[in-house]
Image (cartoon, rainbow, N blue to C red; front, side):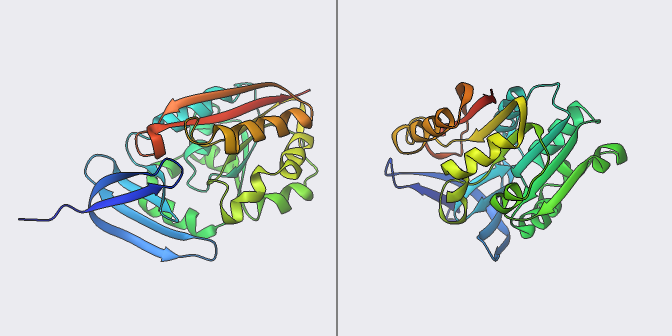
Amino acid sequence: MNTKKIYYEHDGTSETSIGVKYEKYLYRCQSKFQNIEVLKTRKYGNALYLDGCFMLSEKNQDNYHNMCLGLTPQKSKNILIIGGGDYGIASMLSRRDSNAKITIVEIDEKVVQVSKKYFPKHFTLNIEQLKNIKLIIQDGMIFLKNNLINYDSIIIDSTDPIGQAKILYSKSFVRLCGSSLKKGGTLIQQSGSPINDMKSLIKPLIKKYDDIGMKKIILSSFPMPLYPTGTWCFISAKRA
Protein backbone atom coordinates (compact mmCIF):
# COMPACT_ATOMS: atom_id res chain seq x y z
CA MET A 1 0.00 0.00 0.00
CA ASN A 2 1.36 3.40 -0.99
CA THR A 3 1.88 5.92 1.79
CA LYS A 4 0.20 9.27 1.13
CA LYS A 5 2.62 12.14 0.68
CA ILE A 6 1.29 15.10 2.66
CA TYR A 7 3.00 18.46 3.13
CA TYR A 8 2.07 19.98 6.49
CA GLU A 9 2.24 23.66 7.35
CA HIS A 10 2.03 24.07 11.12
CA ASP A 11 0.56 27.21 12.65
CA GLY A 12 1.94 27.87 16.12
CA THR A 13 -0.73 30.39 17.14
CA SER A 14 -3.69 28.08 16.69
CA GLU A 15 -1.58 24.94 17.24
CA THR A 16 -3.05 23.38 14.11
CA SER A 17 -1.59 22.12 10.85
CA ILE A 18 -2.90 22.31 7.29
CA GLY A 19 -1.78 19.49 5.02
CA VAL A 20 -1.96 19.12 1.24
CA LYS A 21 -1.56 15.82 -0.57
CA TYR A 22 1.16 16.00 -3.20
CA GLU A 23 2.55 13.71 -5.87
CA LYS A 24 6.17 14.84 -5.94
CA TYR A 25 8.62 17.66 -5.33
CA LEU A 26 9.30 19.69 -8.44
CA TYR A 27 11.88 22.06 -6.98
CA ARG A 28 13.57 23.08 -3.76
CA CYS A 29 16.43 25.41 -2.91
CA GLN A 30 17.69 27.81 -0.27
CA SER A 31 17.97 31.28 -1.74
CA LYS A 32 19.79 34.16 -0.07
CA PHE A 33 16.58 35.03 1.78
CA GLN A 34 14.39 31.95 2.17
CA ASN A 35 13.73 28.29 1.50
CA ILE A 36 11.78 27.83 -1.75
CA GLU A 37 9.78 24.69 -2.54
CA VAL A 38 7.43 23.77 -5.38
CA LEU A 39 5.20 20.70 -5.11
CA LYS A 40 2.97 19.04 -7.68
CA THR A 41 -0.46 18.46 -6.13
CA ARG A 42 -3.52 16.78 -7.61
CA LYS A 43 -6.17 19.28 -6.51
CA TYR A 44 -4.26 22.56 -6.65
CA GLY A 45 -1.68 21.97 -9.38
CA ASN A 46 1.79 23.32 -8.64
CA ALA A 47 2.06 24.87 -5.17
CA LEU A 48 4.71 27.29 -3.92
CA TYR A 49 5.97 27.32 -0.32
CA LEU A 50 8.41 29.85 1.14
CA ASP A 51 10.04 28.89 4.44
CA GLY A 52 7.39 26.20 4.84
CA CYS A 53 4.46 28.61 4.34
CA PHE A 54 2.02 28.27 1.47
CA MET A 55 2.15 31.18 -0.97
CA LEU A 56 0.21 30.28 -4.10
CA SER A 57 -1.00 27.48 -6.34
CA GLU A 58 -1.99 27.09 -9.98
CA LYS A 59 -5.63 26.40 -9.06
CA ASN A 60 -7.94 27.88 -6.40
CA GLN A 61 -5.72 30.95 -5.94
CA ASP A 62 -8.24 33.43 -7.31
CA ASN A 63 -9.75 34.41 -3.93
CA TYR A 64 -6.52 36.17 -2.92
CA HIS A 65 -5.85 37.85 -6.25
CA ASN A 66 -9.47 38.83 -6.89
CA MET A 67 -9.80 40.46 -3.46
CA CYS A 68 -6.65 42.50 -4.06
CA LEU A 69 -7.83 43.42 -7.55
CA GLY A 70 -11.20 44.54 -6.20
CA LEU A 71 -9.55 46.77 -3.59
CA THR A 72 -7.34 48.46 -6.21
CA PRO A 73 -9.29 51.34 -7.83
CA GLN A 74 -9.74 50.88 -11.57
CA LYS A 75 -8.60 54.45 -12.12
CA SER A 76 -5.12 53.56 -10.76
CA LYS A 77 -2.67 54.11 -13.60
CA ASN A 78 0.61 53.99 -11.69
CA ILE A 79 0.84 51.07 -9.26
CA LEU A 80 3.64 49.86 -6.99
CA ILE A 81 3.76 46.26 -5.72
CA ILE A 82 6.15 45.42 -2.89
CA GLY A 83 6.80 41.68 -3.13
CA GLY A 84 4.63 39.93 -5.71
CA GLY A 85 7.54 38.37 -7.58
CA ASP A 86 5.24 35.60 -8.79
CA TYR A 87 3.53 38.23 -11.02
CA GLY A 88 0.09 36.97 -9.92
CA ILE A 89 -1.37 40.34 -8.93
CA ALA A 90 0.62 42.27 -11.54
CA SER A 91 -0.70 40.10 -14.37
CA MET A 92 -4.33 40.52 -13.24
CA LEU A 93 -3.93 44.30 -12.96
CA SER A 94 -2.33 44.44 -16.39
CA ARG A 95 -5.07 42.32 -17.97
CA ARG A 96 -7.66 44.65 -16.45
CA ASP A 97 -5.92 47.72 -17.84
CA SER A 98 -3.04 47.20 -20.28
CA ASN A 99 -2.14 50.89 -20.00
CA ALA A 100 -1.49 50.75 -16.25
CA LYS A 101 2.16 51.23 -15.29
CA ILE A 102 3.10 48.59 -12.71
CA THR A 103 6.35 48.45 -10.74
CA ILE A 104 7.22 45.25 -8.84
CA VAL A 105 9.87 45.53 -6.14
CA GLU A 106 10.85 41.98 -5.17
CA ILE A 107 13.73 41.23 -2.81
CA ASP A 108 14.37 37.67 -3.99
CA GLU A 109 15.16 37.23 -7.68
CA LYS A 110 14.95 33.45 -7.23
CA VAL A 111 11.20 33.73 -6.56
CA VAL A 112 10.74 35.36 -9.96
CA GLN A 113 12.84 32.72 -11.72
CA VAL A 114 10.99 29.83 -10.05
CA SER A 115 7.58 31.41 -10.71
CA LYS A 116 8.34 31.84 -14.42
CA LYS A 117 9.05 28.12 -14.70
CA TYR A 118 6.33 26.63 -12.49
CA PHE A 119 3.56 29.28 -12.68
CA PRO A 120 3.94 30.43 -16.30
CA LYS A 121 0.36 31.68 -16.80
CA HIS A 122 1.19 34.80 -14.79
CA PHE A 123 3.82 35.69 -17.37
CA THR A 124 1.78 35.03 -20.54
CA LEU A 125 1.03 38.66 -21.27
CA ASN A 126 1.09 40.52 -24.57
CA ILE A 127 3.94 42.82 -25.53
CA GLU A 128 2.11 45.98 -24.45
CA GLN A 129 1.30 44.53 -21.02
CA LEU A 130 4.84 43.24 -20.44
CA LYS A 131 6.25 46.61 -21.49
CA ASN A 132 4.22 48.31 -18.76
CA ILE A 133 5.46 46.02 -15.96
CA LYS A 134 8.81 47.00 -14.49
CA LEU A 135 10.66 44.57 -12.20
CA ILE A 136 13.17 45.86 -9.63
CA ILE A 137 15.13 43.40 -7.49
CA GLN A 138 15.59 45.31 -4.25
CA ASP A 139 14.57 45.49 -0.61
CA GLY A 140 11.22 47.30 -0.49
CA MET A 141 12.25 49.49 2.43
CA ILE A 142 15.38 50.68 0.63
CA PHE A 143 13.39 51.33 -2.53
CA LEU A 144 10.85 53.51 -0.74
CA LYS A 145 13.54 55.47 1.10
CA ASN A 146 14.92 56.54 -2.28
CA ASN A 147 11.61 56.82 -4.09
CA LEU A 148 10.65 60.11 -5.75
CA ILE A 149 7.40 58.97 -7.40
CA ASN A 150 3.85 59.28 -6.04
CA TYR A 151 1.72 56.25 -6.93
CA ASP A 152 -2.03 55.88 -7.34
CA SER A 153 -1.94 52.58 -5.45
CA ILE A 154 0.64 50.64 -3.44
CA ILE A 155 0.14 46.92 -2.76
CA ILE A 156 2.15 45.05 -0.13
CA ASP A 157 2.08 41.44 -1.36
CA SER A 158 4.62 40.09 1.09
CA THR A 159 5.19 37.05 3.24
CA ASP A 160 4.15 37.14 6.90
CA PRO A 161 6.07 39.41 9.32
CA ILE A 162 8.86 36.94 9.98
CA GLY A 163 12.57 37.55 9.43
CA GLN A 164 13.28 39.85 6.49
CA ALA A 165 9.58 40.73 6.08
CA LYS A 166 9.14 42.14 9.62
CA ILE A 167 10.16 45.60 8.50
CA LEU A 168 7.24 45.69 6.04
CA TYR A 169 4.83 45.86 8.98
CA SER A 170 6.67 48.61 10.88
CA LYS A 171 5.37 52.16 11.32
CA SER A 172 8.42 53.54 9.49
CA PHE A 173 7.61 51.40 6.44
CA VAL A 174 3.90 52.27 6.53
CA ARG A 175 4.83 55.96 6.77
CA LEU A 176 7.06 55.65 3.69
CA CYS A 177 4.20 53.99 1.82
CA GLY A 178 1.86 56.82 2.78
CA SER A 179 4.28 59.48 1.62
CA SER A 180 4.76 57.64 -1.69
CA LEU A 181 1.04 57.81 -2.51
CA LYS A 182 -0.76 60.57 -4.36
CA LYS A 183 -3.44 62.42 -2.42
CA GLY A 184 -6.39 60.02 -2.23
CA GLY A 185 -4.15 57.11 -3.25
CA THR A 186 -4.80 53.59 -1.98
CA LEU A 187 -2.59 51.41 0.22
CA ILE A 188 -3.35 47.66 0.35
CA GLN A 189 -1.51 45.19 2.59
CA GLN A 190 -1.88 41.45 3.13
CA SER A 191 -2.52 41.18 6.86
CA GLY A 192 -2.66 37.54 7.89
CA SER A 193 -5.52 35.60 9.42
CA PRO A 194 -8.38 37.59 11.01
CA ILE A 195 -8.90 34.59 13.29
CA ASN A 196 -5.31 34.15 14.45
CA ASP A 197 -3.68 37.54 13.95
CA MET A 198 -6.23 40.14 15.05
CA LYS A 199 -4.50 41.04 18.32
CA SER A 200 -0.87 40.48 17.34
CA LEU A 201 -0.83 41.89 13.80
CA ILE A 202 -4.05 43.36 12.43
CA LYS A 203 -5.08 45.79 15.20
CA PRO A 204 -1.50 47.10 15.67
CA LEU A 205 -1.19 47.58 11.90
CA ILE A 206 -4.52 49.43 11.72
CA LYS A 207 -3.29 51.70 14.54
CA LYS A 208 -0.12 52.45 12.58
CA TYR A 209 -2.22 53.38 9.56
CA ASP A 210 -4.32 55.66 11.75
CA ASP A 211 -1.24 57.19 13.42
CA ILE A 212 0.25 58.29 10.09
CA GLY A 213 -3.06 59.85 9.02
CA MET A 214 -4.46 57.25 6.62
CA LYS A 215 -8.24 57.43 6.12
CA LYS A 216 -11.04 54.97 5.29
CA ILE A 217 -9.17 52.05 6.83
CA ILE A 218 -10.98 48.80 5.95
CA LEU A 219 -10.32 45.16 6.80
CA SER A 220 -11.43 42.76 4.04
CA SER A 221 -11.39 39.01 4.65
CA PHE A 222 -11.77 36.13 2.19
CA PRO A 223 -11.50 32.31 2.16
CA MET A 224 -8.15 30.65 1.35
CA PRO A 225 -8.24 26.86 1.88
CA LEU A 226 -4.45 26.37 2.14
CA TYR A 227 -3.74 29.33 4.40
CA PRO A 228 -3.75 28.82 8.20
CA THR A 229 -7.38 28.86 9.52
CA GLY A 230 -8.63 28.94 5.90
CA THR A 231 -9.36 32.68 6.08
CA TRP A 232 -7.11 35.61 5.17
CA CYS A 233 -7.39 39.38 4.87
CA PHE A 234 -6.12 42.64 3.43
CA ILE A 235 -6.07 46.04 5.09
CA SER A 236 -6.75 48.92 2.72
CA ALA A 237 -6.72 52.66 3.30
CA LYS A 238 -6.58 56.05 1.56
CA ARG A 239 -4.05 58.82 1.86
CA ALA A 240 -5.78 61.94 3.10
